[in-house]
Each structure stands twice: as structure tokens, then as C-alpha cells.
Image: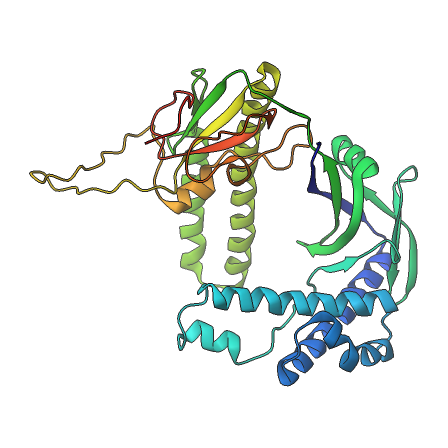
Length: 366
């Protein structure tokens, strides 16, 4: 049975000045309404979507929101509280009585005036041939709103778009992030495996002896660190704004480098009919650094992977936005060992817990 996976495609909107003003007013109105719904939910203790509609829907309609927009506002608030309560249950905001948790529990959730707003097919329609969208706003229906994107994105958008799309305003630019429901590649039994060792000096080294060095990325980060220090020393509002822009630029560059590496490894695996096995950097090596003890100790080399969580997030070459081949360690792993499924999709990425070599996995670890 062929499975399906949900991807997102981001396209950039090219509004005129009048269209941009209508979009901005819409986000402002929707997020002001979300603040009001959040206040009602906090005061009444009603956080479920359908139960929250009864005390808030009429007020949202009176504000001038359409029926679908009002329901999306209520759903957005309910989802925000569901996420908050899940974080509290899981201890992500600290133990009971901690400052962060007390602050989160003592006031309603707030929404930025330019926070993203979801739209469904009733209030957003796509005209792919013309390269435009028609979207509901508080100023009326805005038609012939142009959008652009890469040819691959537009092809995926036309063929697989399903469900809601989010209107996003970021860095003085407008975007639509659409959900696409894509079929996964048919399953087959891999003939072999590509082992991938992740690190910092060498971002990835494969068992085919392909080495993806991180020298340029480290030099780029050092350059940004020097610029950060210069701006931080100024301690002005302008310097703070520039620091935020630089942080986003550095993150985008690192993401781009990791994505290119992941696409190359996945392309080789798909072409040769092999699977991909990654070492699990979340598994720490227990031991002592002090000599003369009976416990083992680890001496990490410069080309091996780091055991820190931050290094895992920063350097993990996992490709989730390629429509041709997809896979993640969580989907491919079976418990904490080597994958044992008889059939897997081409190029599926697996996690091998505690792997320290580049040899393809052939048996379950002890």
C-alpha cells in the first residue's frame, strides 16, 4: 500500500499597495479577534474548539469577520491552548511554581498583530494558469493577487495542494504556505545501505567515502560572530534590529547547506536502490574523562559527530522537503536498533542508535 505524506510549499505574494493594505488589515483584525477569544477562553476555562464557539462566534461576526474566518480564529486559539497545556504536562515550561510556568498559566495567550492566519478553500482560491490567488479580506475579496515561486514548488502546488493555507507576513514580505498531500514512493527491499557519520568539522561522511566538509560554514559562522560582537557593543535599537536580521540570515544559510548535502545523499541512495543509516547523536557515551578508572571514556575526534543535542539539530542532514524521496530517523527506526522492516521506501533514512562507524548496518546492535 502506497502511503502519503504532507509537505508544505511556500510561495511569495506580490501585492500592490492597495492589496497589501487589505492583507495587513485582515491580519490585524483576525489577531485582535484571537486576543478577545483567548481572553474569554482563559476567563471561562473553556478551551475546546466547539465549546468555545458558543460564547464567541456571534461577537466575531459582529466584528466584521466572515463565517470561515471566525471559525479559523476560534480554532487557532483552541490549538494554541492545546499546545500550551501539552507543554505544561510534559514539563517543558518547568516544574510547578517555576517563574516561566507561573507566567504562562497566569495570563491569556496573546497573538501578535501580524501573526499568521489560516485560510481554507472557501476563502482562498488559486488560479494556477494566471499565477494569481483570490483571498478574503476585511475590505472585501481581493482578486488577481499575484504569487511566484520556483518551478518545482509551483508544480508540486498545482498537483498536490490539499487543505488549508497560511497567510504569513515576514520581513516586510507576504507569503502563502500551502499544504500538499504527496504520495510516497512505492516500497521495495534495499539492496544495501549507505552509512552516514555526522559531525562538525565534517558535516557528513558516507560509507562511499564522500566527505562533506564544514570548513566554509564554520568560516561563515565566525564572520557572523565577529559582526554580532560589533553590533552588540553598540547597544542601540538599530543594532538590535540588524542583529535579528543577521541571525535569520545565518540560520537560512546553514539550513541551505544542510539541505544540499541531504539531497545529494538521498539522490545517490535512490539511484543505487539503497537505504540510508544515520548514527543516533542523541545517544550519549557514558564514561569518565579521568585516567586510572575502570569506566570507559570517550575521546571525540574532529571528524566524528558530537553528542550534543544542539549539534544534532544543527548538522543533521535530513531532507524533508524533497517530493521525490522522503524519510526521517523517527519514521525509519524500529525501537532503538537497526531497521528490520522487510520493505522500505527508496532512500529512507534510518537511525542506528550509538553507531560510531560508517559501515552499513547488517545486524541489530547488542
